[in-house]
Image (cartoon, rainbow, N blue to C red):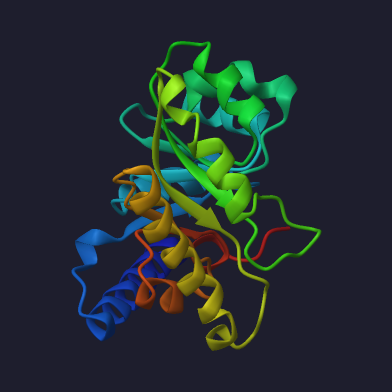
Length: 223
């Protein structure tokens, strides 16, 4: 096996173990390989290992990869959405994890391409992180029905980096609780929780993650 094959197997085993501890079926957790700065050759190796979902942070970098890699893959926009790049997003991505502003959603809807959207929440309150608050999310959801092509499917968050992942369990639990509250309040059926990265995805799965965004644990430290 090459190192990426080893890494994929190791991550999948950890996902399975975390699901077992939580009494969940591993099929309910989608592994999204984060490919920021990862070249096409290494992405292709991940594809050959069965990975079908890939997350990109930057539109321009993603555009080149998506055009050159095989069709049939599912691409997730997980980075901050710059308004001057919005026009490229509907053609490139199937999911958006980083919606946190009404004006972005409104402009995306104008391209008349169905998009599955997760709303990014800043649970930790860190100024260095993007995302909205629960009140900000509610203001968006009050008028989300006016958009024709945007399908709200869930929430996303990034926990603070920590060497002890148990310390961020409450971040993930809070996101799950917010999802439950807004689903009830707005009569929605969003069910995706995009939370957990290489350092903390096992705890995130125990708290209900349906999507984990894994980069370093699959491809190694970025240069």
